[in-house]
Structure formats: structure tokens, C-alpha cells
Length: 323
Image 1 (cartoon, rainbow, N blue to C red):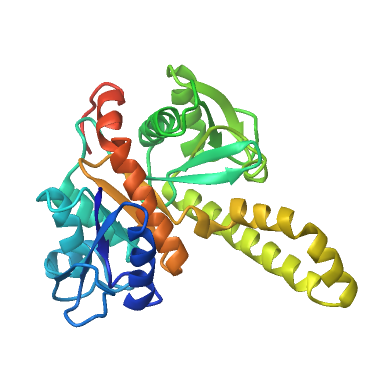
Image 2: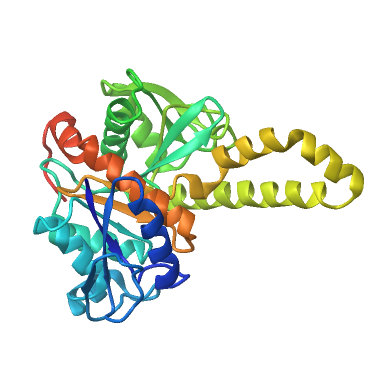
């Protein structure tokens, strides 16, 4: 039974929502261990008391050093010390990255960890990497992100020789800023199954098995996709309930609508792997509901069972100098 350290104080909705998600996930053969302030209602789950909370507006690196016993840092440290097999937090993403680098450290050869998010594309999951860990990146970083994303897609999603594409403003190799132009050249020379550039409009259609970009662009893209999906699904539901004819029609398409919502709803995935560390870390959305928290914990559990860290470490490209 994978033991998952859960930052009970992370997220915008408070500990009660995190605890509800952890309780839901505990029924699936997982053992969530909560890290948070003494006295919170855990519903019977184990609580490891902590001191302090890293807020969303804290400066990540400074907060991690200044609050070593906070719920987020203590949960990450639990993986390092062997008290947990993975960590989940819906708290400050930058602090998760800083704590991961400090406590878990990078895998050999990894220049920078990256966030890998499975996007529910029409033809199957597309791995978007980096989705927010590195706002600034160099071409060689994007090459390594692509490598990690390809290993993730092959090992965890079962995709043989996954196709990789570079997110840009046009499909032609010369389109994009200096970063994408130089990254395109590196990817084209690599042994990855590189299919060239792709545009943002094609991601949900299934542009590639792996779409690589820098963390700034990736995070903007991810939030735009999630916001668009959520808004459209809510608008669709509102239109069905607007009048009697819509309600009757809604009854007829309800099974299909539920399947569509389940496939596209961001809460279905719940979180994303922070790849490139010596321990398994899952970052959940700051506004995660209990459903999303439960799914993030399940994602962590699958990562433990499938040995994400071990497989990635053994399959990474030849070591390069860390920067």
C-alpha cells in the first residue's frame, strides 16, 4: 500500500477539502499521511503535526529555508527520510520545486526538473512538459524536457516510440522566438521521434504524444486549456437547463455528456508529476477540489507502483553538467 505524504495546508480551499480528498483516496488501497497544523480534523487519517504554512504569495526559495518545518517542506522531507513513498501538495508550486531540489535532489544528469501534465487530447493523452517549473529555459533544457516527457509517455502511458513536437507559433522550423528556433535544431538532431513544431490550437486534437515548451509558455497554455474546458462544460450544462426542450434533450445525451465531462474535466487528472527528482512528487492545482486531491493522490500511487523515478533515472540521456 503506497504511503503518500499529503500537504494538508496547501491549496486555496483549506485543510478540510484536502482531508476529504485524502479520505476518498484512502479507499483505493492507498495510505495518505497528512502533514499539517495540530488539531485539524483528519477523519481518522494519520496526522504528522507541522509548524508553519508556506503561503501562495511567499517567495519560494526563501520560504522553504525560513520554514523548514512547514507542512509542505515536512511532507517532501518524508519521502527523503523514507516515511513516505511520494508527496502531494496543492500549495505553492515554486516552493514544491525548491523543496524538491533541497530535500530530494535531482537525478544524475538532470539539469532542471520539469512538470509533466497529461492533457486529455482527442486521440489519447498528450504529455505537456514543462507546465510551470521553469519560467526561463535554454534550448538544451527543452531537449532534456522532451527526453523526460518521451520516457514518461513510453514507460507510463505505454506509447511505443512517442512522437515529440515543439510548441511554437507556426509549424515551420524558422517560426518562433530564439529559444524555440534553437531548441528545434537540437531536437531535430536528437534520437527522439521529433515531428517538428506544433501550434496551441492542435493540442486538444492530439498534436503529438509529447508537447515540449518552456515553463512560462507551458503554464499559460495549461491554464488556458483548463479554463476553456471548464467554461465550455459549464456553459453546456447551463444551456441544457435553460428551458424544457433543453432539459428533455439533456436527458437523452446525459450518458455521452458525462463521459465527455469525465474525460475533459481537469479534476480527473488532479495533478502533475515533477519529473527529474530522486523522489516522487505530485503537484496539484491550487484551487483543487476534494475530487482533484483524491485523483492527485491516486496519480502519486500509480507513480509509486510503476516506479516512475527509477524508470526515468535508468532511461535518461547521457549525463550532462548540472546548471
